[in-house]
Image 1 (cartoon, rainbow, N blue to C red):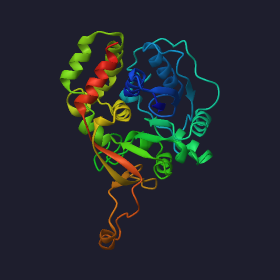
Image 2: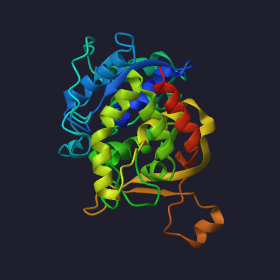
Image 3: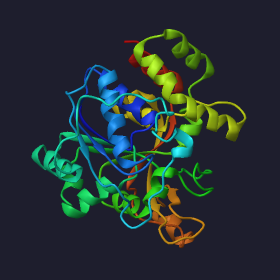
Image 4: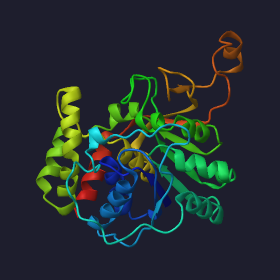
Length: 320
């Protein structure tokens, strides 16, 4: 599997990178940085340090992409992840530096030079992917597969009642990408809350492992633990990005999927970035429910994942 990871590196983004690094059948062609969780340059530093702590410093190029959303004012999640995105752990600067050039050009060049071979794990706002598509629309047909973490599957959001963070930051980009014709699998915040919470016994295993990567995991999880305890009454280990990565590299983790018609709201005031997800109507149904969307499916939506299989994959990645 030849993979590009598009990320706004903070917290679970780093664990996703670790999963891909530790998968023997995955080659990470590059990591591209998009606006999102924390200050833009810090996200690049977090990706570089994650590579270094995993023993992969200097082996995977890191490219900076779009520092701002396409149209909106920037939004971040520093209150959740800490000012540095890593629970203010104070990690040193990695020796590896970002590449010269722009992530969007790297995306286009890599996809177009390797038609049908490259997959993208998009675990950030979709600004980089949308910009690459606008610049070179043929990437939609030349990309083997696009794995997107974003949106809601008819549930409550983590940013507003109607929205998930990645789509909320850049809803225009999300709408462009969802409707661009990519072969696309969507992993939503709904899936995270149903299948991507690390069980307490698995978290205790990680805490007791005392390896460099398990200590890294615990260090950068402290701020999310505190924020989820405030929100839900107990600390939660939430894994939207690493669960999406796990599904991409081990398809057996996907227990239930549905081919759906997906779109993203860009005009609403209270519903900014709301993701409309429904199964397409049959012709007979369309005659009855004439206001219901009736276009063909444009995404495979993951409805259920194997939490234990995912947790064991994460534990194995942290064992080195």
